[in-house]
Amino acid sequence: MSEAKVTWFGHSCFLIELAGSSLVLDPYGVGSVPGLRLPDLNADEVHISHDHTDHNAAQRVLCTGRPLQFTAREVPGDHDHHDGAHRGKNKILVIEGDGLRIVHLGDQGRLLTQEQIDAIGRPDLLMLPVGGYFTINAQEAHQIMDQLQPVVTVPMHYRYNRMGFQMLDTLDAFLDTDVPVLRAQEKQFVITQGMERQILLPVLVQ
Image 1 (cartoon, rainbow, N blue to C red):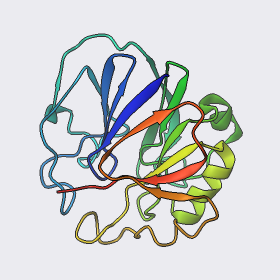
Image 2 (cartoon, rainbow, N blue to C red; image 1 turned 90 degrees about the vertical axis):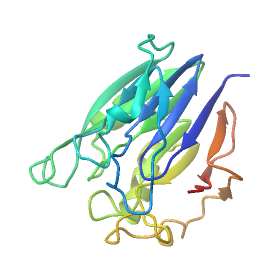
Image 3 (tube, rainbow, N blue to C red; image 1 turned 135 degrees about the horizontal axis):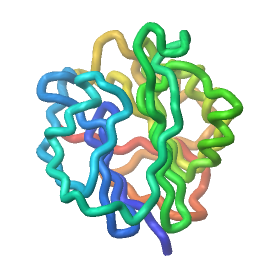
């Protein structure tokens, strides 16, 4: 069975292992996210959604340079509600391989247009910012879930205890939903075809 192994390192940083290749998404710099410390990572490539220090620390990833055995394409997005005029542009990443589609929304700051929805498609896994202030908030996150109808949604870019920026919301509002919420036992989880629709919460141990 086709599967993707996904590891969450807090904030918006993930390691995707799929089809024999690996990709790190949005690694954060030293001291850039309160309460979080990113270990040195190894992967074939690294993707940066936008050039802010809590997302752009490509130097923290030792890249092999091997070509990816899956496709990774970018869909243009916005970091705010004003066409990027306040916080700049954002790159939504769509990963496809072994029959799976994985989508990382980066710091998306507004609802998706129909053109973006069509370009993204329905994700098997959606990594979705929910904390507001810098990105979409919980209500807008649910609207994007309605737009994309993801199978598995993993929230990111929120505050939890001492982890994350104080101006961000916690998960409370986002978890007020009829979508089943499952809690993983660790920060790593597996995505396969045919999973039930769910919100999945990986455990982050620092």
